[in-house]
Amino acid sequence: MAADTLGSYGSLARFTEIERVMKVNDKTVLAAGGDIADFQYLKSVMEQKQIDEDCRDDGLSLKPKALHCWLTRVLYNRRSKFDPLWNTYIVGGLEDGEPFLGYVNLQGTAFTETLVCTGLGGDLALPVMRSAMEKKGGLLSEAEAREVMLQCLRLGYLRDCRAWPRYHIATVTKDGSKIEGPLMIDSDWKYAADVQGYE
Image (cartoon, rainbow, N blue to C red; front, side, top):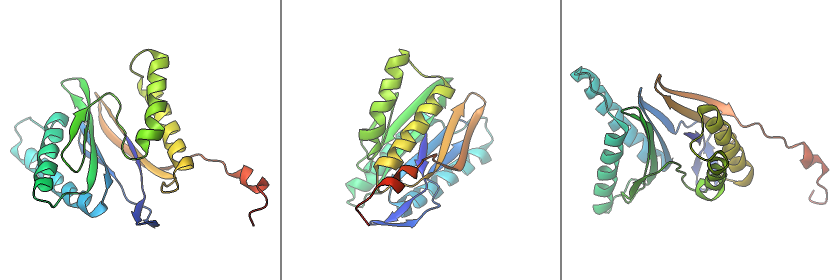
């Protein structure tokens, strides 16, 4: 799971160090797109939920399916009050040793899938990921998935004028979850020096 670090103010790339990927616990991570203030509000609520889970000390933790279901209810509830949280969320993790990946949008529409993208990534990155899975004939290994994810991030940055070259990437394995970053996309703009006639 990955997201860039840009928080736009309309067309202005106003905030360039926003972390939109969140580690919920050792088995669950979350990424968000959309309104930063709404994400910060819901992030504080989720952090408090995890603190409450830790305080119970009953050996249970917030699982990805439970978080996905809870987000669906919260977002649908706010939408029904005509006061939506303007976000799209992706929840990922391991539940009972099985991978989980779920999508929830501001209307509370939710689904689970092997591959999930939000925004322009649905048009640019999803075909690249599907092609990689079709070539392999099944699920990718962690290293293969990471390479495809980096290719999608690079593609998104080079093709979308509202993207940013810095990003965070999250990984969940049986050993736990981790977030790396901010990292930089390895792009090469040397060819732009040869473009003439637009000075």
